[in-house]
Length: 493
Ligand code: HEM
Image (cartoon, rainbow, N blue to C red; front, side, top):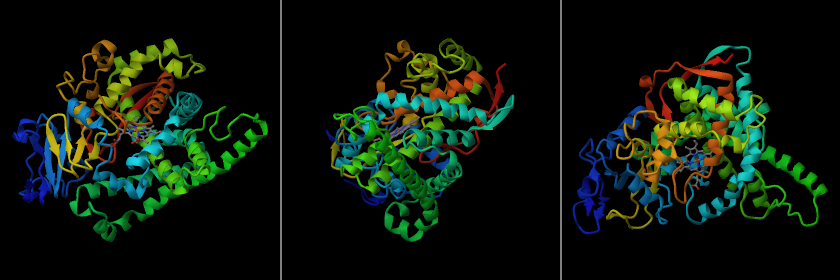
């Protein structure tokens, strides 16, 4: 029952007692201790490459690491079975490495706490709220282009300029605070975030730091100042918004009619941070809870979309013919003064949507997702996972699995036309996950990314600089590259 050399890992078995190899592959470890030390000493690129090696087994596979069985999923059927299993909503142990940063906010919490927070935050992503954000996305996109004023062609490093745009956008939309006078603090937040990511990988690749005890004694101090910077930044945002919201509520009180509900916002729904502050007044969340969610939304909201945009613009530069199709469509539907750049017009940009989808297929901002079994769990395919097993769904590999994608490495937005998608397994494409714990911000993300692309393409042609073959992927909390990704912007006449 146990894999003794893998430090007594309980084995995954099958319901009918047949060998597990009939259902999944077993990844050979680098040492006699099964896969326990496969990641030890690997740098960020090594961790990424190692993970891709697993996918070469061609089917879902098992690993045994330091007393723990791991079920790795690289196909759509397996993803479907995990993501739709109501008993598999607890995140895997690697999410604990995010606790010093995010504590237990929506991304990292589980059970009742997660249910309550999800219920609280879901209305803040309502269509009406997203509609109100559109003007901000548009203004921030125009502000983004202002930095290139007077220049007709300019080479930019996307990893440097895009994150500032997405951080500004999430702070102004979700948090209701403009970063203009806090721009430098925003930059410091992003810089220090890199150190937090270092910490995440360091723990992931060293089994001795999986538990908190040794990590807290020997390594936690290395990241204390970075944590301090990011937490101070979010605390300042919360403090600012508390004051602004009080002023807004005061002016609403003055104009409200008898049956207006001030906090439920019958007249106007509240954006994210306001909803949390109002929930605090109702005793549904405390200050620490607000900090957890602000840190979570800020991180999820800025980092993921910046990766999507970086690769979106890289692909625009690499595929001039497809860029032209996007541009022609934009010219057809969106006026030059951007006055009709609202959600309904964004929805008309179908080719741009396929383009963004294909970008997220090849370069999913979140390349993998993890779950943990809280009890012995039997899966549809007949595997029985012992309590405490870890499950990793490798979106990156599902999205490149030749079972669903013909010539998977090729960039072809046309894959996403309704005709071309109809016979494909729905879970072959899961950049935003799926099921109960899917991405709460997916509509927000697409709206923001499309808006910047429209505003930018109207003004500039995007030309290639970075050779895609030179890109070295690395593992981070999200998808990272070792090199800068650059494009050249040439102003349209
Ligand atoms: C291209 C952009 C984005 C991508 C690819 C993306 C992807 C994902 C994925 C794959 C998950 C599931 C993670 C897991 O199971 O571990 C997730 C969860 C989440 N995302 Fe996103 N995301 C994006 C943008 C956003 C934005 C803009 C926000 C907020 C404004 C956001 C907020 C969240 C939150 C709070 C969760 C946790 C949801 C829960 O567990 O209930 N995401 N996202």
